[in-house]
Structure formats: C-alpha cells, structure tokens
Image (cartoon, rainbow, N blue to C red):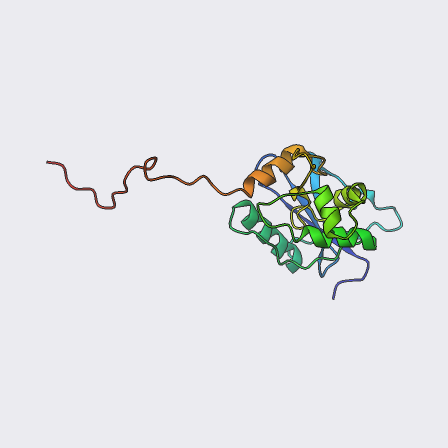
Length: 196
C-alpha cells in the first residue's frame, strides 16, 4: 500500500519533436497530471524541486508504478497512431465548472475540433466561452483529456499550455493519412516475373 498524500512521477521521453519529454504524475492509483518539459530538465507545474524542507519526500520517482506504466504505454501507442482513446484512470483536482469542461472535452472525437463557443454551449453555459477557455487551460492531463482539440471560433489555433507547435502537431497527428489512389501507387508485385 502506498502512503496517502504521496505524489509519484516518472518521465516519458523519446517522443516526436516538438514534444521532448513529459512528466507523468500519479497519486498512486490514478493519473493526476501530465507536465510538458519547458527546457531541458525543467517542467511546467509543481514538482520535486518545489517541495519544501518540511515535506522533502512528498514526490517520489516510481517508474514501476502500474498506472504510470499504463499511461506511458498508452501515450506511446497514441503517438504511433494506433490509439485514439485512453483507458488510464484519472483523478483530476478542479472546481465543479472545470470538471464539467474536462468531462466534455473527452467527448470531442479523435481528429475533430470544437470551438470554445461550441464547448461552452455543450456544457450548458453558452455565454461562458472565456471561462471555458480558462478551464481548458487548467486541464492537468493534456493529450489524454484532449484540450488540444479546442480552437478559436474562426478556426485559428489558440493558446495551449504546451505551446502552439505541440497543439498543431497533435491535431495533425489525428488527421487521417493521405490515401493513395490507384494512379499514384505503382502496381504491387509479390512475385516479380523473371525477365528474359
């Protein structure tokens, strides 16, 4: 049994550019955060270096923690283009309004985008698109709760905690690969005939 109040983390690296490294954070039972590396070795959000002298052991590296291993595996599958949804358990701390926004984000289909206005309408607060944007920006588990799928009403890419290059990459990753037509692909020969 893991101690209560403990925070566990591991790192996921060797991801496609522009991602660099991600820090995966758990309470021991569920995923609680995904942090983007800002520059080599530093991450957005609290972490082991932010602990006070009174709680130096609150953050513990746990590469073998099942929920973190599952998260890393699912994210690798997502980046490889073979996973379109996630099954890792989540425990997200936020207000009731934030929770409603994050829950609705999970309804945006893979490969689709919604505007902040559309997201506000879907949670029953059509006049709250700015508040929806603020809640979207506080999403503690980007990628898994797909806040990158929310764009401006004009179709423009707007803010993303990981930066717009990462948002653009994720949206492009989720688009179907171009299909080859019969004219553009050479005929397939499994057993080429011997030429005389």
